[in-house]
Image 1 (tube, rainbow, N blue to C red):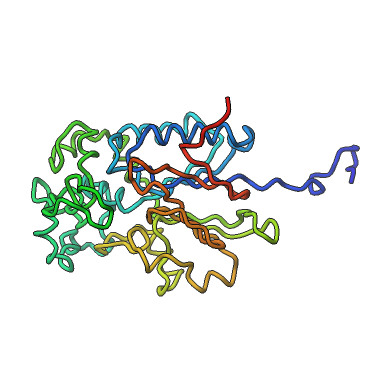
Image 2 (cartoon, rainbow, N blue to C red):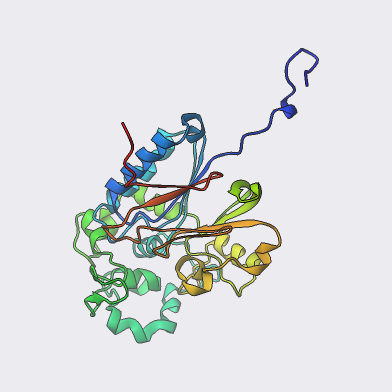
Length: 321
């Protein structure tokens, strides 16, 4: 249809769905992150990529050797790609890192972080919770993160623990201090502390397109590191996550397993994509997207899913020159 000036009226041109790219857990592997990003740039139309919404699903630190470089890379994205939108979700590992360096928001009811210890004190000796400078006012997860695990072998993963239950040793070392040292608080640059403080616990988009067997579907999208708890009211969960309520010792949607695997039933009434990392698996079932093929293991790839196409792109993809 032509407008009065002979041009095509804007509403007659189908609007191309915005590209959304969700990137799984990086866990301190800078080379994997760089290779994945390069592959995304190569495989995605440049115009689409330059204006894409990029959602990082959390767990930037621990296990891999390069946490400091990973966070430097992420911080620079906003200036290097000014027309993209970037969302940095907090993973449970990042939450614990933030707890240790003192950048979590205080509990909204005025309580002390030491209140978060009580439910789990039976694990203190086995997990070797941190007892160095500043521990008295530290959230439980900061103490666990910097602790010294007494058991050396992680039977579930088939790997040796690296310092703590969180495998935080390499993160300390990337900042030039030994695992469990209170000196990490001084060693972490202010811009890294700001990055950790600014991470969001959940991100929502009202209109994201996804390719399904029936064609393109318009959906709401909720991105959260582990998932939404199946048996809790979604509105209450979202309220707590948006407020970054630190009264709880463990934030289920950041650290849960079986309880957050499925999409809560109430979200199936209005099509809602729930996308997460955390679980050490690549699992796509309907609108439930779990993108964590790496799991923080050196031999595994880091993956991303691109919407609406649902294409999976990995750092290990060998692209023709």
